[in-house]
Amino acid sequence: MPSVRYIALAVAVALSPVSSVPTPEPASSIAAGAPLTSYKCFTGTSFPTTYLPFDQLLSINQPFISQHNSDATVNDIISAIKSVALSSSVRSELILAQIMQESGGDLSRVGDSGKSIGLMQAQITAEAPVQCAPGQCSLNDIQGMLQQSVSGHTGPGAPVSPGIAFELQNYAGTGAALRVYNTGHLPDANNLQTATTCSTSSYVSDVANRLLGLSPEVFPSPQELQSLCGFVPATIC
Image (tube, rainbow, N blue to C red; front, top):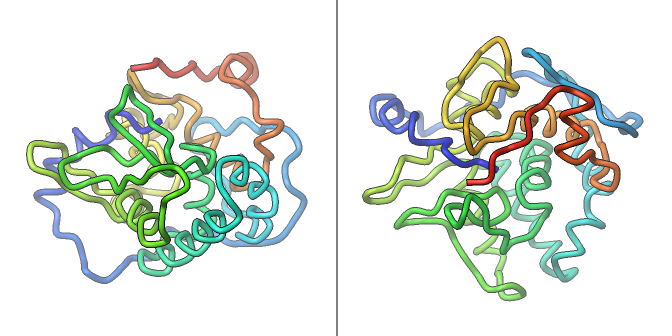
């Protein structure tokens, strides 16, 4: 759950010029391979340098996305991921992995005690997020929802929400960017499981496992992750 992620970044965003030309995600490679069958603990600064390709990750996760959506809506989600990935230069694999981490593909998911909503749990501001009733989300709605989480949005009286694209451009490595997306700042650059209240200690490791193809069906519970890796379960805020 991205909870307090953007408060600490509001000043930084205001002072930092953002290029109109998308900057590619930090170097990583894509290669087909055997997906993980059990959870791997990524601690410290460790993060995979090779992800499974989008189509392979989609084949693993699409059955779970379909639990929340019609076939037509699933196809729109896939199209929206590809479109936003192209416009932002954020890998489609990463967007899909974050969707599975944040909402499991549920367009109407609400988190952070009503402060965030949608596929990637965009923070609610006066200008965002795009919201639509279950079964009534158009392709444009879904693209807008993802665009707000990937490329950011602002709203009067609300924190700036720069999005994962900004964080990938301004922090060293995908793991660090994910920690900032979830927490709002980087508590410890040498220990990416360090989180704050209302954020998720296992977030970076969870997304890494999703990028390596671990099925939601066998994903450990927060309590199991604490026993397995030492990750502290998130505080519900």
